[in-house]
Image (cartoon, rainbow, N blue to C red; front, side, top):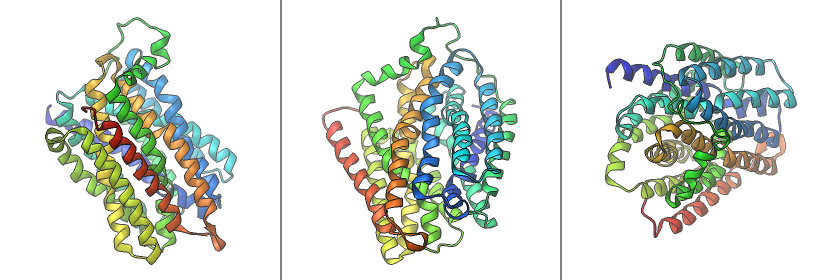
Length: 395
């Protein structure tokens, strides 16, 4: 890979994750404190991301695999999504906000899998090259989080405006990327492919089914982090919470750079198991840290995000790409998007919103220790089930 190509692909990853880094972390705070949505309504708003992840990758994956260049499809998704984010900034009622954000997520959710697929297409050694390119996505998230935190705009509409502008600019940049034609253009069209069933057939392999099943269940507890960590830290009085949450992305950079080395020395089964256990540990730290206002526990819990994410979702992306046929790689990455951001997260966001609503106290305060014990327990159950499933399997 030439230095220029590395820089171009790395820039795509930086922009890809700068967009959610600007608005997603603080969205719960904006909805709870500025728009006065309830905990259940906030959970429903965050479920739009899951709905988009379920609906759109099956369609866009087929388009990218057969009919449209990846860079052109990405440009359309980014520009359309940015326009809808700007629309959201003018809405203050729950129903229309939910509807427009759902449209945004339907066009934006596929970009995570499609951008990864474009990078995989232009790399010779995905296990070696992808982590050092993907790490720039984490840097983009950090830049956005620090910017929002330093500016003190966490409870305002400005994170949505920043993200909308960044999305439109990323769409224009996508048109300058290397041409990435659909690899399956010469393959015969079938409705099985149109419905995404070819990629789903990979689940017939027991080893892949175990990994995908674990990720699906793990998205139940991970939904708590994405929806309510920023409101939690702000309620406990942590200053510049959005900026400090980027500690998790900073550790993520270190773990990503170490991941190729770890993948060469340890079976992926143990790496994923470690990631699941880390999710449980960090939620336990949140629960006990909130109980006594021990901020050092909260900082450790935030810092563990890098290992928790890289050992689970990112390892699974590499694993699936390694086993997917070339003509189905975009669909396969879309499958991972469905699992990690779709079905499980939809249930997880609803569950998280309901639990936060149940533990809401007078004056819009919350019983955070009890709230965080729930995802900790769920993650421990997932770890136990996954350990049992892999005990006699070679992954």
